Image (cartoon, rainbow, N blue to C red; front, side, top):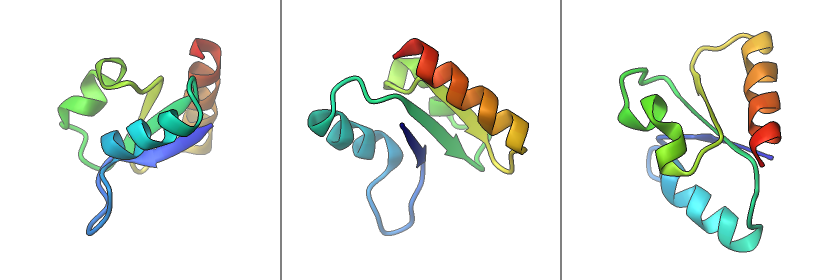
Length: 74
């Protein structure tokens, strides 16, 4: 399971990180998260390869729900 921030200043972006992780472990369940709630990747996370999405800040129950959603899709 991976929970990946969409934007990492000075680092690899979340979408590119997911591509690299899935090259190592195909089918890896992945949740994207970001504080930019209007980002198109959050709105259409499945089109970008993610199994679930979270908008920061998020509550523990929201994280649990996203993890369960991602796990059930993989």
